[in-house]
Length: 93
Image 1: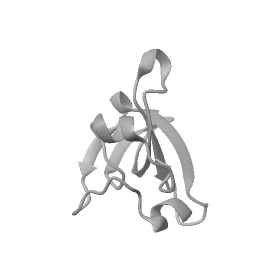
Image 2 (image 1 turned 90 degrees about the horizontal axis):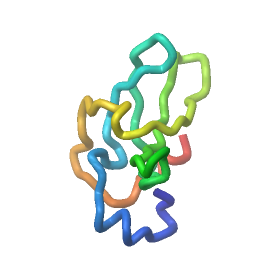
Image 3 (image 1 turned 60 degrees about the horizontal axis):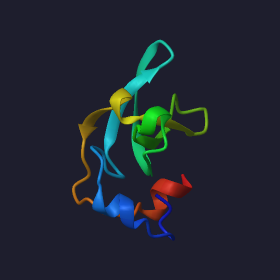
């Protein structure tokens, strides 16, 4: 979610993941890890919940941003304190 906009529907209907959760998912043939940086809401095919995920493939390349359906993600760990707004460092990296 954009931290400068308020999405009342998303606040009332939280999905299975929160901004800051560390998740694992399939990227091509590899299983990779990333961090949820945005809850896009039910914008997916058939109204499925979408999440924006930031991932790094290695130390050389810049981080990538991809969107995945909730069914494609598996939580590895949750942040220590959950917030409804993403922190600025998660968005800008």
